Length: 191
Image (cartoon, rainbow, N blue to C red; front, side, top):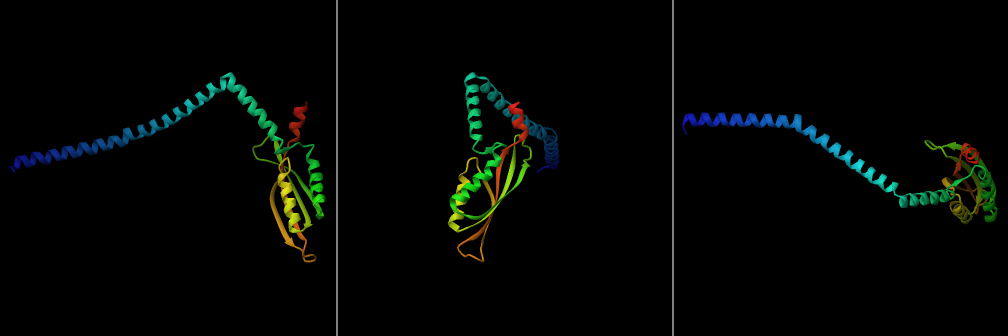
């Protein structure tokens, strides 16, 4: 190959390599950030389209009626999970009746009172500690009755210790929680 052709070919390779590096540099400086911004904008656009469709559906009379009915159903079902502030005192009596029916002995019930729930304006949590002596079958029946109770009683913790005095009886302690409507909401609703 002639010297002139080698020199020409070498110059062409350097020019192409320089252009390639320049174009690669421009891509990462100019186009790559635009692609990232484009993806973000497309994500926002998809979210806004979904909100628009939801708003259009919510504005239709039939859908409004369905939403009102659904809200009403949820309010009715809330009674299965939340007890009113006035009825919270009766819960202790309900637990006593269950214990009497199952013939457990040495029942002790202590209420810690209403504890606020973070970011919740309408309900609070009432923690109740109970202890009693029962055979394992009685304990299991008590546990079952408490879990079936309406409004729902959540059993946070329980401990069973075999009694040293009576091997057929066990010392049981349980930590329960229930949701209670806050007092302020009751006075606002009735006023």
